[in-house]
Image (tube, rainbow over all chains, first blue to last red; front, top):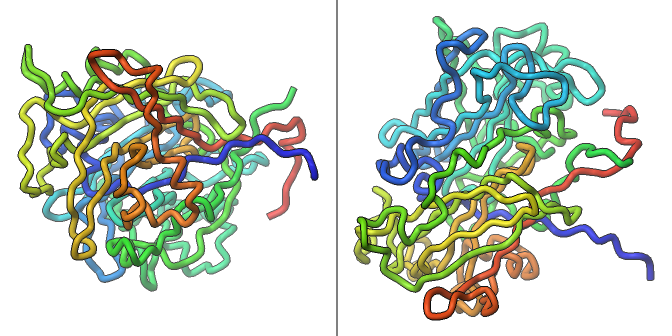
Length: 205
Length: 242
């Protein structure tokens, strides 16, 4: 016999199911009497520093069907690369930026829309700079454990080329699945494919 | 002093796999490629802060938070309470706990739910709270009903409450479901059965806690939740290969 390590086991995940909006975005669903507004419905205000951007896209399943019941969460640094979080020890982030977004998808088109600012660069644990990115978490009916991925930007070639996380992707042809494509006027497109030749890269961290 | 290091890796054999044919919707929604492994970085070790000023006075009281004045939700009144801990056994203070559920008849207040059971005009079905300094949380609600769902020809969901949890770091983000002690539908449910290990399933079953019951008012169920923990070592910052 050896000594037993007394770690607890993480609570196992279960699907968010089709009714996740009741709990997480009730106003988006039409339940407006309980919370004044949905958490994460507004990330920026008029005084937020940084380049305004809008990211839109859809979540697509392995049969090519667009999900209408997914919920997406976004977490990102401010324009200077600082997180508005108690865990951030490098300095104070922009007080006019929450860093956190949460949205459902349009009930008809399945399109999500996230208005934010382009994030600054954040160091990897060894000090190397990561390319600008947004952490994205996706839940839906049929997804048993929330999917972690990242939104990088296709117009950041130099930074992307030296990003330590992108460097971990052996199949280099999959990297474009993590790049939001500029569509002009600060708009970007980022679709998430759950399966298929262009399956989005998902992370285990 | 040991410092908080990177997050301990998830035990993927403990969580449900993505592809679980018994839960049919997962078949076309399960990623098929291997997940790309990475150490947590600041992007996952930080997370949004939710202050107690966010909360309204009835946010954790589903019996009243959608009820007209003088009314309350129909159903068996229950308290659901517990602690949010991390894998190292420490309470997680300031964790945002959000819940949603069907009403006592098994019907959700959602445009996509067309079950025969009626809506309760005095029940909305969502609540939220933030854990205290020791990681404790508490809700008051009604016990949700079981309901049928289109998966197998005759599948029923056991009574359950959905839980969404934010800890200190985005890497801890978790959504799960709480079940009730003694419900025979638990072990027949294809969604429950996406979890391969029965010991893991048991971790989702809240026990009746008579000591926390409010006599002549509400029964109590205790449900503790464990989020990922961080490595504790003074050597955390050593260089590491790819």
